[in-house]
Length: 275
Image (cartoon, rainbow, N blue to C red; front, side, top):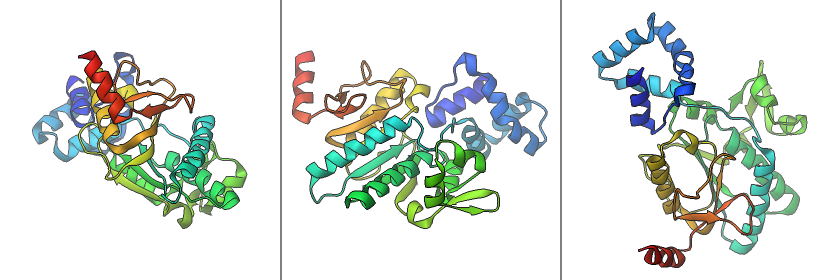
């Protein structure tokens, strides 16, 4: 068991709390069945023999928490949409850029795309460029396919949006091409890889930092700070905060519940004062 949790932390930077250790066996049962293994001990033995390799990737991918849904915390996404409209006015002709970090199987960036597209249609606004990243190849494969079960599609999506943005294929729902092509899905490890190129006006990194140690969270904040425009907005999950974690972001006065990227001159002043 220790080897498995250590492998997850080494590859993805994530930790599994002792009170959630039950998730390990539950998540890895499909791999045990696929390989004809009777226990986690046998799986660990294979990991040692294989020196992790492809099997290690499969184990880590299975352990990643991919809990997500369309319009999860809908009020937060509506606030992102409102902020984007105001920021676009300030940006003028420059198109906004949004990064959905830890996008899982794609429901968050697709929800944002629906919001932005509906606003653009109603008010003639530009649709921001959306980059969505995740560490999991399996999750990204599903996100790029844009195919969801009846259960997944009903979680957060009203019938109107289901009918507007998705087609039925058998028992599944598939995102229409005009929705999918507005999101660029890329693989990225927040704890090890550089941020996507360019600067972003808004970064969403919701319910990802919960699984990292304090030092790993600081590393992620450092990465996010390299990718955001001065004064840009960072959106975290309800149980996450920048306070005591980083000097790169501060609570936003203009957008309650969001965080503002520090202005370089102010960050330098605070660092000098602290020294």
